[in-house]
Length: 179
Ligand code: S3P
Image (cartoon, rainbow, N blue to C red; front, side):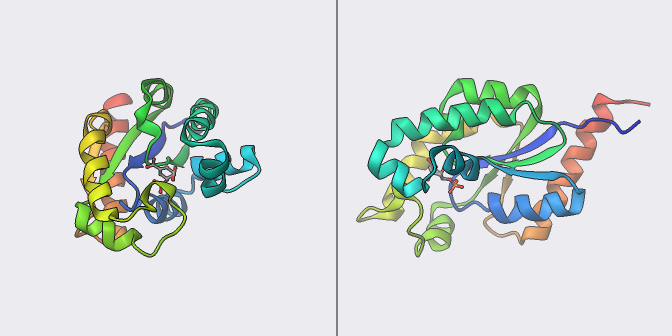
């Protein structure tokens, strides 16, 4: 019988590589890929920038919590979570019921380089995005610290991050299912 595995949930700040790493990981592990931002857009029937501008961030966070609950019922998936999903304790709690939280990290400068031409992230459409990244990272540190494992992607290529996650996942499942 195929064993049901925990979800691998990628959390972390915008621009830390969750999407590219999640896509590769789901291909390599042959697991379903789930993206909370896409599910939120589907639910709202509009893009994330539109949700923020028309309904506000709080409304977005409400939809994000609904989606966190829904995806936490799944098993065996790779879940790419939006950068702010950790801001609500309830989200962390439900996601952890069926998965491990891997937090991808990067320095503010690297994040800035990765996102500077992006217009799809409402929180960074400000005059000084680098400073905003620094401020948000500092404020959010305590929330990201709730993750189970941390990988600094600043100087890694996608395959190296994927390998590290797979090693961690294997070590966890050995502990959970000792022979
Ligand atoms: C956000 C991150 C975004 C998206 C929204 C808010 C955040 O997702 O959910 O713009 O608060 O950090 P990514 O981390 O995938 O960019």
